[in-house]
Image (cartoon, rainbow, N blue to C red; front, side):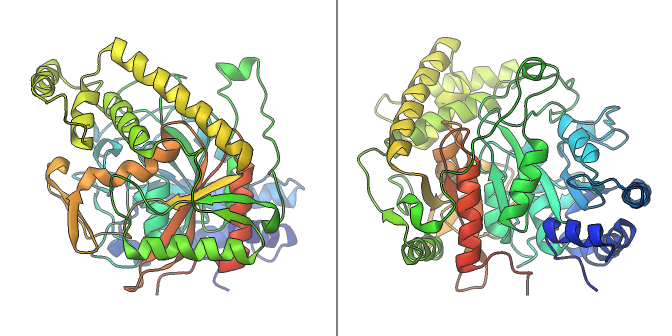
Length: 483
């Protein structure tokens, strides 16, 4: 029997009944990777010998009566997570030989839950692209169309899932890095509430793996079903045992509703700063129709929605302040000179990127204060709605574009080009205020490419968009293997 595209939940049930062993699942996954990954290039650092040993140990543990959440289930891990004995490079050539000696906290949690780690998945350089290619490991291709990207920065993980290379993967997200690859590859991903899952050991080399609190960035689960996202989030969620975990425990509230007809949903398909392509708009509308058919209360407009233009500019400033924080002094001074030359009337996203890269601490504090006002506005909105449905990006997966200057790239939306990085505005809707967001498949484009949407929920109520994702999977279908 071919187990490669079964969900983790289905594999766990088969393991419990003895229908299959972890050794058999692991060997099947390795065989598929060795056969198909020469083309996809999703698994950049295989760890097959240790995976086989872990699978044998899982079978012995199960024979002895053990049963853990992921016991014996093959999974992959984004390259940016530390795994003791394997390279963590973030795709940066100067660090190709960086070998951590300790697992990231999330890798430790996977192993404690019994998972079999097959290896690490490919990323863009420094995790800073909507694609996944680098000089060390090469280019990862979309399983649906090899001429197109699987997304980034968790593109290797999404491509692996869509190809049947393991049942689950873990990634990270600051600019849609979980959600965009899921949307491009037709799988599921969940960006947790900011701070919900500890991120220690997911740090660029050669920085030490300290238990710091990240701004904007989160770690989260990827899967081929909505229920598997919840299964993996329950393994990942919780504070770092070195800091907040000393005093705090985790108690996520249940979903606000269990039935589709009880949900109150705001549906958005237009952004003031960039158009939504026809294929993505059709995906949003398909989800909206399923919600209506299921009896949910669906609205298209609300005065409670925070200003999307202001939110996008604020997100852009905070994002690029983060990305430029470690630039060399000479490069930073050049950016400051360019920013000083901007017209005060220039309110474009390009100007926001440049200003963000040179924000003073005083200006960053002011931006952070404005973020808190947006968070409060979202609290008011979620008193009236349970979730917001909107695009992940304006288009399905686009052709590979390896131009070295991302600012010079363009994104084609129904025949008209726009600045490449402007596509991040939809990711920022949830990222800037730190809200949870679940990416779900929503059909196919006319060219047969996957199209997804994101379901944004209230802060720390992650189970609400996750449950809505489960209900939509039942209503419109979910993952389909590439044709």
